[in-house]
Length: 265
Image 1 (tube, rainbow, N blue to C red):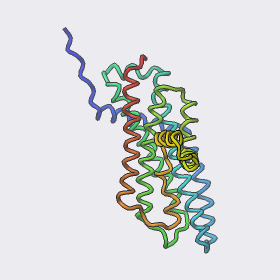
Image 2 (image 1 turned 135 degrees about the vertical axis):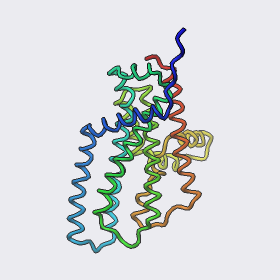
Image 3 (image 1 turned 90 degrees about the vertical axis):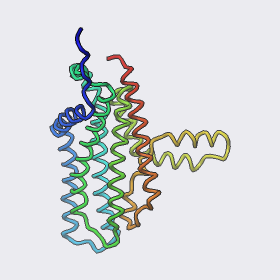
Image 4 (image 1 turned 90 degrees about the horizontal axis):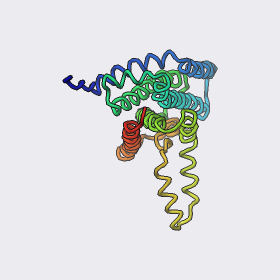
């Protein structure tokens, strides 16, 4: 009788898939299109800085634009990678030799998520340098607020990647892209707008309760707080936001892993 095959450890799965995923992502044209967009901003920011900015409001606007572009484009990169990670391997049938090694499906899901997050974080770092360095700065800016903004944006990338992996188990790529873009661009505004106009009735409370389960990327965005010169968040507020992103990511990954394990391939 043949001995059962040894399960590939999670660390080995992440290292193997992560390297291949990262190199493949850098070969795609999306990464260079994002660099092109940031390059256009870079040219404009250098021109503005060369001419000279004496108005603090203008300097804050240029800096805000650069950071917003960097963070949004890195989120877009992570979104596209996450929603395509599993479906494309199923379509090309490259998933079957991998799972035959054997690699547990939950390890496969975690490795794909980590790879998407790592690639998105690398993209974020590159674009952030292009968005922050050439922009004009004022003495009112707090470096600690910028550090908090970067950390929360990395958590936001992790949350977006987890949601993308989770949705890809159930729905087509195009549907998932639309859903996640709506959450990313308008989810926070929708939650605040709807929640603020609900009456104090039983059904109003029910809707507020349901709104709490809509992933809110807005609470992880401190760009305006930094460029407006505000002090960093207190430790408890910062920790709560970190914990929120951790819980949403964890639930999405756990649910996605469970569903993918039960899915027939």
